[in-house]
Image (tube, rainbow, N blue to C red; front, top):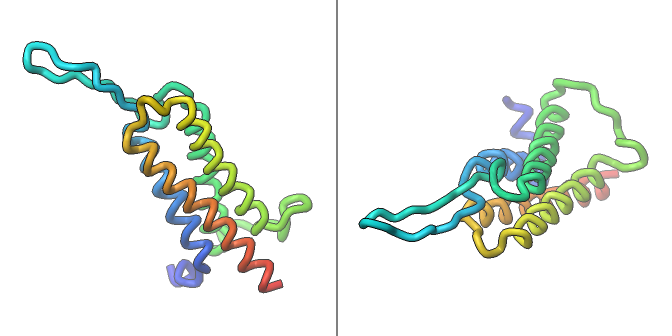
Length: 145
């Protein structure tokens, strides 16, 4: 656990945002108030895994979790990872991955803008956190080289 204290700011942001995005994926991303009848209010909610266009949120969550997992696994030394992923450094991979997560959440929002639940707003924040954390990791690793 002492190794986790050695995380850089960008790595902390990515790890936290990825974990929060996973938790958030089970909250209502899609919500419709159907109305009330006989004094009972009816509503319809779906999580990021269930809502219409769930492919976009599922991809965003899986990518965010993969980013967080890479940070944790590499810091704890649980697996031997290559220095680069193809022609890209891990900093670049995190930067592009964070941008992709944010873009996927925006695409999902565009498809469901009339019925947005509070989970999608949290998803926006997590996506922005992953994009910022990825940018920060890239900057930290570029300046360290």
